[in-house]
Image (cartoon, rainbow, N blue to C red):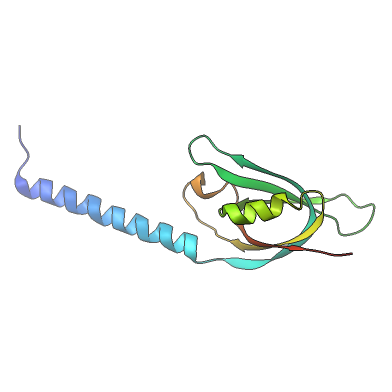
Length: 124
């Protein structure tokens, strides 16, 4: 049994509207940052992970006081040039400039909400 043309047109229109709304939401979530800032600490690791979407995922050890248990700052990197800069400073004290993007619907853009955009070497 064939569906009437008006039902097919309405279904196709609904799919197009939902796709456009989803694409707009995704663009907004990726380009509008919830917060921005810097975190300083010792770079511990950075690796490229993922089954289908490979993203750079890293860990920065934040040490507030000597002898205190370090807190870990988990982050993602979308730019390979920034990932190369970070890899050059593994084991050193650095400051990461980041943007927080909340509400991303899938993990293809990164495992965390924190996306590093720049790296600064902290001199003692």
